[in-house]
Structure formats: C-alpha cells, structure tokens
Length: 443
Image (tube, rainbow, N blue to C red):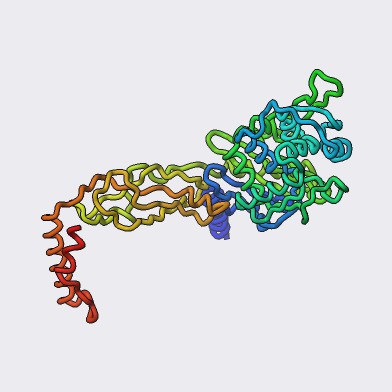
C-alpha cells in the first residue's frame, strides 16, 4: 500500500513539474480568467498573437478608442505639412456643444482659440471630445468629411470589422443635430483595435510623446485652468501603474463598458494589449495588467538562424549559363522571432525562386525563408509577409564562355539520352535533339 502511495505521489509531482516547466505558454492562457467581452495580446515587433479569446473579430462599440484613428489622421496631416503644431483653431458651435454636454471635455467655448498642440494634448491625455472634433474640423472642414476619411483609412489599414460614425466615439444617438452625416453604428473589433494601435505606433511613433503624459494642465496660467489626469491609469503615478506603459487609449460608454488599447515596453519587447467590455475601471486595468504580465513573463525574442547560415532545406540553387551550375544559398539577415518559454520555437520554411541566369553576384536574392509557428499566428497577413527573410547567393557566379556552354550542352544531352535508354524518361519521353539544345545554351 505504501509503495503504491509513493508511486502515485511521484507521478503527481512529476506531472506538476511537467506542467510548470514543459508546457508551452499558450497552454496556460486559461489561467488569466479575463471576464471581458474580448481580449488580445500582440507582440509589436513581429505582429504575432500571444493571447486571444474567441471574440477578437466580433465588432463592439469602441467608445473613445476611436480617437486612435483621429490621432493617426491628425499626425498624418501634420507630417504632410497640411497642419502645424502652432496653428490656431477656433472652436465651432459643434465643438462648443461637445464642450458643454459630451462626456470627457475641456469645456471649449464657442470662438475659443487653441493651438493644434493644446488640442492634441487634450485629446490624447484627457480624451476630450470637444478638442477632438476641433482637430477633425481643422483637418477636413467638417466632422462628417473627417469621418469619411477615417473609414477610408480603416479600409487601407485592413480593419475589416470597424466602422466609424464620429471622430470621438461618443454615442452618436446622443448628438442630436450635431451627429455627423454618416450612416450606421460605431463598431470595432479587438483585432482591429490592435491593428490600429500598431499602425499608429509604426507610422507615427511621436504619438507616445503625448499618450505617455500622466497629468497636464489645460489653460495653464489662464482663467479656468483644468488639470487633465490621463484616463490610462496604467501610466506612472496613476492608480494601476504598470512598468513600461506609455499609451495608448481608453474608452468608456454605457454600451461599450470599459475598454483599453494599451502598450508597454520592457527592454526590447513592446506589447499591445486590447481589452474590450470590462465591467469596471478596475476590471479593465487589471485585465490589461494580466495580459502584460503574461506576455513579458512567458515570451522572449530568439535568434533562430543567423546571417550567412546555410539551411538544410535549401542548400543551393541551380544557375543557368554560369561557370558553376549551382551556387550555395545563405541567409541574407538574421531570423529573429518571438518564442514562448517551453515552446518548440519556429520552423523555417524555405522558398527558392526560379534558377537565376549568370552572372550572379554574392548577395543577390534567390528566395525567402519564413519562420512558422502555428501556435503563435500573425495578427494579419501583412506581418507574415514582413517576417520573410531573404535567401541570397553566397558567392559570385560568372557567366560561362561559349566553349564551356558548348561542351556542357553535349554532356547534358548525352546524360538525358542515357536516362532515356535506361528507362529514366519513361516510354513516352521525348528527348530534344542536340541541335535544338545548343542554340538556347549558347545565347
């Protein structure tokens, strides 16, 4: 009896150790127990999905996470020289309505003049709806025209489960005559929120200069100053501060509940976490913290193969009309990927192009390698394409002279003829004549 108990205990201990040390991180996702509508965690460098529930493609009301697209388009206009940080914008009647009635706001009065920088800070830090619409009108003339641009950009960025009706995310049915003339309902999926956040970080990284500000005073030194405390309470000095957090955007309405697209960086790893539909502010930030903890503690970057390495799957490629009939193939750069602790890591899939014609130079691209990890899919196809690494020729291959090509053609013809005689080509094989082969090889 004692022996059986000891054996059972040993097996149990072994299983516990196996679970703790040997099971890939993906298998422990259920431990997070996130009570939200949807949650997603993405590695920003590779675009690989580290955590996802079953609802990441379900559209939900995004509330003020909408403002990530407004930030994108405003920064795009500034980058194109169509808007400047010190340009002064005058608040319209629509802006005044939002400043008086609509959710988070900095209480802009009709005719009040503020710079683009002041308004952008109010939008990025305090999620001010009045400041957001003032910027939208400055870029496109009207909020309706701006929202149309938002939807155009959404399509360009591959946001397939997103539709914008306002520049702010404020409930469109509460805007009365100030609702933009755009049909439909405001929606966004968790996948689209991550794609938008990553696009904002990639194309306009300067946004972090604003989203990382925990507190700032609007109208500092003037009448009616307003202390703006960032609604992203993961930032330093705020109630749910998480080390490395520097963005991006929260959202809340009765219909949307509490949501956030957050980003944090530790070392060389940046993560983007999306939480949609938490029941409270506390639940929203605790869910985001759990996602970040999971990502930073269970994943790392690994150099899978190095520049100059040869791959067993593609050691060489044929070269046409060269002094050598083939050339060794090597990696043109390092293959770096995010991997899970305890996981197998990526497998490299090689794809060689058609045989190049000499002369071939060392470093000429002749194929690609893709790191494949089915357990860590890419957020979108574009990230899979971006992950491809070039396979290149290892050495120069000069073009062969006519004399060498002539005799190569003869030997190749003899070899094919021998194969035909010995049955290598099959009964129906048709061997081209030597006369037909020579002109092509000697060109």
